[in-house]
Length: 189
Figure 1 (cartoon, helix red, strand yellow):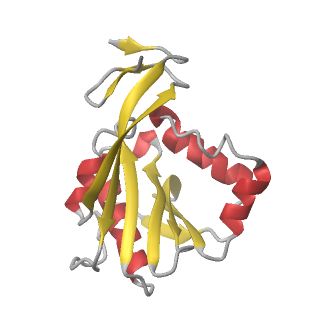
Figure 2 (cartoon, one colour):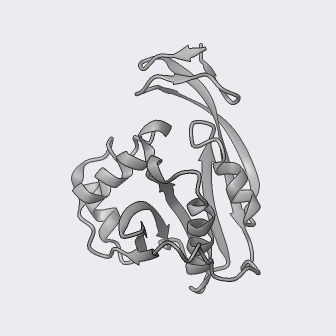
Figure 3 (spheres, helix red, strand yellow):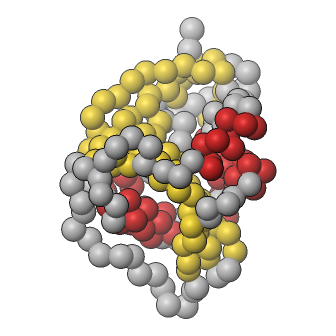
């Protein structure tokens, strides 16, 4: 069943935690491709929002657009917020944000690939890179959340690399884009 933009839907948010450093090594990728992760300490609000939209448009990522430019800029410029971009054969393929603003905790605030780069192993590469980068700091816990509006494999990916669900909440929202009703997404009353 198709659900149209403007309709209210119910969906589930899963909150996950990793309470100790993982025991895997830094990721490797097919040597036929050039892959690089770069920290972007001076990313502009416009560049961030453009990438955020490319990655999250199909998954109802809207929270950053609902904030004022000053609030987004304050988040991006905070010394404890680190933005990283993934390049695949020199093309921007995705990004993640590590938020260390809470003492000894890293929140993986955003994580995703541009749609053209889905399905070829880059998600596994990038999540391992993000996790190991976070645990290179003095933290005791890493957090992430995802929901049933996100990519269908997001929760599985987080669990595969060591995150455990600590709680699940039911939420509602108005859709910005048309989408199919799937498991965990339904029309709300």
